[in-house]
Length: 226
Ligand code: SF4
Image (tube, rainbow, N blue to C red; front, side, top):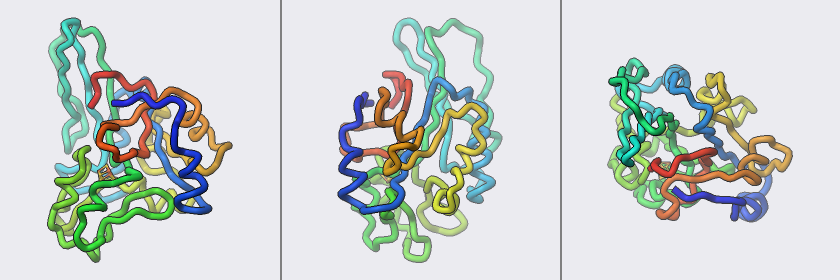
């Protein structure tokens, strides 16, 4: 985890790399997530995600006073966290995860046929008609967000609900979150309220040391999260 404040590179992203138009990013406020997993159910319904797979998931962290950290995830199919023994923990919290739509995506670099690519508005997509299912991108992603789609026989992952955001709608997960834990931003719009949060508040990205330059920014991210 790296705390990034203020954001170092958004100015260049706004004007240099992709020209005019939207440039999407995503904000996750971990202090707002209650682990209800409505987002996972909405994603499955919107994107026809097959059973036992997910494009987004929620991790539950339980940190004991001695520093031990226990992490589990909601069930892949029922989207419910298992009950745990009542015990004292120093802190407990939930962390939504999804594709980081990296600005420097290793998945794109390793794809031998160009089926995984970046759009001009900062989203990484998979072209199912070109993907040969080799799995290189699944292995290259340091965040483990890709899976092999058992029906379509191609790589699959979150795409910020590209079919929705390019029509001005929220991703299904954002729309379904009653607590505003998930929000989408257009970094090229300085008046966008989420862009203002990303550019002026203390935010963090996951595994910054890999140089992937994620587009998913976390507010209130605990130091134990990887
Ligand atoms: Fe690619 Fe993984 Fe980055 Fe998403 S999180 S853009 S799948 S490397």
